[in-house]
Length: 493
Image (tube, rainbow, N blue to C red; front, side):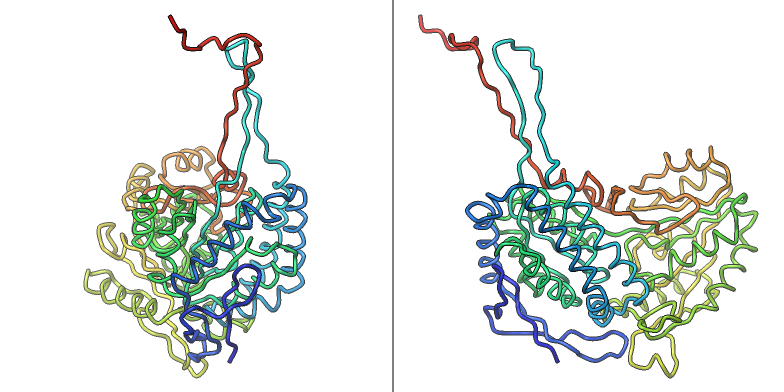
């Protein structure tokens, strides 16, 4: 069993409290590694190192081009070590190896993409109305950044948070979920090999109340970037406000996948199935609400059930597996609780609705792909994020009805629209109160396209150019050019 350490100030160190916790393979149900449980002293040590690296260390004096070159080397190392990183992440959170492999290829591109931004951050000259002065701006890094990441895609979240922050000139401390910390710790070693100076990239693992709260409350942390539940996100937001920290929050969703009668129904059915059962439904953008036009509801539902019946559950390392286990015991119990809730509310289960069984599923936390119909939008199963393989089918009559249903939730992360009518696609895209609309596709992410939500789905944007802006301050400079007294000088009489 591997025993990890914290990565602080460019070195591997034991946690201050001298305690570790087991991390469990969700497929086999067995502990396979030990993760250090950090505490407030470990956070203080990491924040001090990060602040020192930014203010007095080589990171602060390094040219932007040099920072970009180090980030590019890190991208090369991600590619060279992709198989190992993927194997560790699959073992830690049960995600399909095929999906993690694809993500690792994009991960390297994330580091290349933001490496290119490092030396292209610039201010502007402003032609102000005062003829005796010149004005211009600098863009400066905001300071030490704490990145709190979730267990469903630890390496991806670390990349899309840390790469733009480092390109901006910030230093970072990553606190991964205690349920899936191993891949982030493995990645930390690559930052050292890439040549990042000590203190620029740090990883402190542990429990949220011990490590996460200490980072949020530390006065020398300038920004918190968090991915997780809306409940925890609200607590982070409230706590960070006490010290006026910047905050970006990528939270939950209850996303509508809207299928119109003129859609390519075969393509739409495949998109709906992958949109909810991919990653076992454990994704913030899961298309957990299927809104389908009343004229095609029965035929489309039959098509969905047929496809979903063929889904294969099993070993996430097996290329034939479509759906892996639920990643953590608490999440497994939560999904089963929502099945009970849906049954009690009167939703009709067409498929699944129970734990999956089989000779190759005995060690893991598997739940059958589950489809409910006769769902109304006021049911808890239609309003609350489940984060599991449960689809709710709701019918609509026309565009106006679909928009009303689509927006009638507390979340606003993503939506899918399936139609062959371009005008309808544009109308729906504008009317849906979400951060991203996918038309005739679903889960089509790009690190170049801003991603984030409205309402309880969070604040700010990750990916794209906008992500870099979130780690920069603008400083304004006004210089008098007239040798005489300033035009607004106080006059003594």
